[in-house]
Image (cartoon, rainbow over all chains, first blue to last red; front, side, top):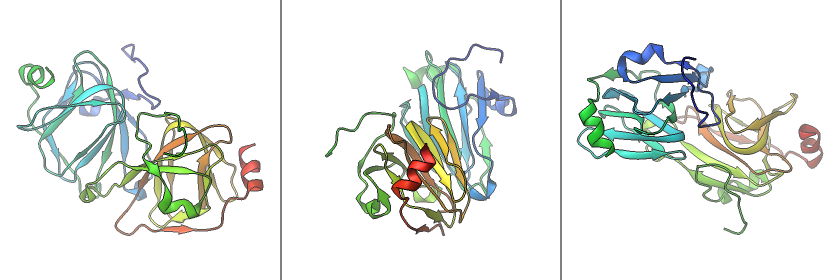
Amino acid sequence: MEKNIPKISAFPTGESNSAFEQYFSGKSYLAPLTVNSDLNVPMANVTFEPGCRNNWHTHTGGQILICVGGSGYYQERNQPARRLEAGDIVEIPADVEHWHGAAADSWFSHIGVTCNPQTNKNIWLEAVSDEEYREAVK
Amino acid sequence: MEKNIPKISAFPTGESNSAFEQYFSGKSYLAPLTVNSDLNVPMANVTFEPGCRNNWHTHTGGQILICVGGSGYYQERNQPARRLEAGDIVEIPADVEHWHGAAADSWFSHIGVTCNPQTNKNIWLEAVSDEEYREAVK
């Protein structure tokens, strides 16, 4: 690991999230938590460094975020951002444009649950600009 | 709430788990965490008092346990029990006979995820006897 990552939850941090880094502004880490595909609930712990967020995107089958450590934000297009702390749950309906990530001054971890995995696809859009991010989290 | 329940996770404890109490030895609490049925990942936080466990049972569509606080156990029929702590994940395949619950000396909370909810049914079997429980957790 190239950074000194604080332990902010009981769940593993995993490795550098290189598969998705093109869709993130800032550094993130990914720890898959499940292996049994028959259960149809793939989940992974995602850890964001302070200020890190993913691009605007949608999931064609929706997603659930289970917040497990630190502080972050979730924002849907044209809505105020929602502050997130450990213990919060976000239910993201299919096809809703949104982003999520850490607060500017805190690491953040959530378990991301892929809903309806038989058909679910991520559709990645533009990055959340520094100006959009500052406005959302202020 | 009739008991002084310690705060062992960031997730809500909810109310007395009266709907399922006939299938539990000991007192438990249930906090549903999701409402959007289109996502097909219903989940609830289950909190067990020390020594509390559910009956032997199966899920026809499987279940995932996300351990969030305290210490507990998971046991499949004819297998040694697995000790559980916050941060542990249990993937329970369809139709496998098992039980889960708290350690004798600790409260325990896990998020229970219903897999394949379109068709999943719980099949409840006999209680885990005090002798079985003592043997499993010793």
